[in-house]
Structures are given as structure tokens and as C-alpha cells.
Amino acid sequence: MEKKQPAAPMTAVIPDDARRLATSSRFVTVSTLDEKGMPETRIMFSLRRGRDAKKPVFAGLGSDFATLLGTSASSRKTTQIRRDGRACLYYSANSQFKGLSVKGRLEEVDDPAIRAALWKPAWEMYYPGGCEGGDFSVFRFWPETGRYYHGLQVAEFDAR
Image (tube, rainbow, N blue to C red; front, side):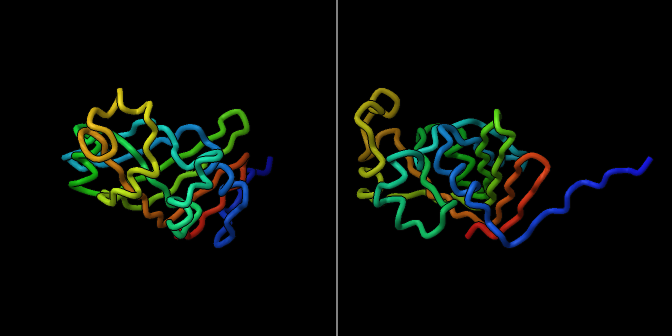
């Protein structure tokens, strides 16, 4: 019986479906590095989705896979990102067997206009002090490489 070989990864071509997945996923899984250099993963709301993806603040990021993340300034992940910005974001459509892994770097955003453009008044209960400070932090994700999975196909690409 002949052994079936896995499909070879495609390179350089970025599937349109990967772009759609990055802007349609309600959640994004974010992995950062802890103080021992070990990965730690958590799920966050994806801010670059649906009609929010059309906000001018996202248009200026330069890549379909760059994004902004809002989180608590007092969280462990914020401490980890400030120490080492390397990160991996993962978007998925589990029922369709689709996944998108994007590796890159996170950097803190202090620009009040960007913070205000992302802010939603309902977040006050999560981030006391509002968008001007308090416990609200914003990070910009600068993508480097991507891997898109669908069925048995894999596409690897430069995500910048």
C-alpha cells in the first residue's frame, strides 16, 4: 500500500480567505512569552472585525494582518508584552477547519487618537479610568509571517 504524503506548503501566495478570516473572527487567540520564555495563550476579542475593521485607525496599519489589541494595563499579558513583544495571533473557523497563525511583534500604543478610536463606552466597567488612562492599554501587532490552514492545504506567507 502506497503511503500518502502530506500536501506541500504553498509559499508567497496569500489566500483571500486568510484575509477574510482575520477580519471576520470574533475572537483571536494571543500567545505571549512569560518570564521564563514559555508561551502563554489566552483568547481576546478581535477588534478588527465586521464594521469595526473599516475604522480609519485600521486603514493606517499597512498590512491586512496588522491589528490593534485592547487589554487591561494591570494584566499579566501586558507585563509580558512590555518585557518581550514577540507574539503569535491565531484566528479560526473551527466548523470549517480553517485556521490562521500570524507571528510578529506587539508594541504599546500611547497615541490618544488611536486609543479613542478603539474605545467603546461599555468598556468602562472593564477598564476603570476610560481610554485616557486608568487600566486600558492598547498594543499594535506588527505581523511578520503567516500560515493559513484549510482542510489539508497550508499556505505560508510573508504577512508584512
